[in-house]
Length: 112
Image: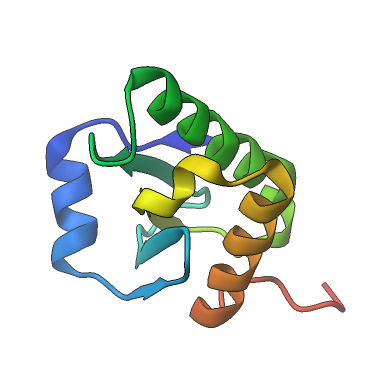
């Protein structure tokens, strides 16, 4: 899993955004023209202290890592955590991530 690290990379995804949201996360998606996905996680201080924010970031990255083979390739994906994200479990993280991916139509078809 490649990561988005620079502010300019995040800004480009936001600028050309195609976003969907649920109770916990907002998901921005943009095609990157590569053969791999790049993922970034953004969490505001409104979510909680650094321990809480880091936990949420780890949950989102791990949920994506475990389900990455179910996604189309060639995408830049940014997850923005909402305040409710501080209380989410791993199971809720996976459900949120997969629900948002289905909304974006970026999941691989079952036959592939």
